[in-house]
Length: 84
Image (cartoon, rainbow, N blue to C red; front, side, top):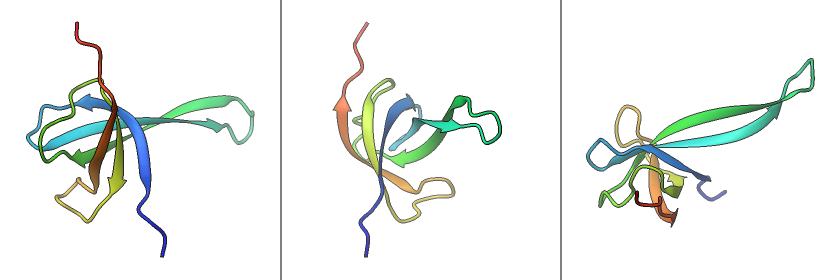
């Protein structure tokens, strides 16, 4: 059996309790014209201790369904956002 999928992305919202929204970006090639395009996906992830803040780079992994939209869980924080 394969392990859980892990994705790295940036926290774009931390306004919920115990949840963050993580945005990931990938590059895909247009089918007809061949131009490279950026596509983003947003995942709602469980953050038990409210550690992640907006702008942090994090790794999330698949988990069991925790709510209507929450299917991912925070694994670790890779880099912290710079404080201004």
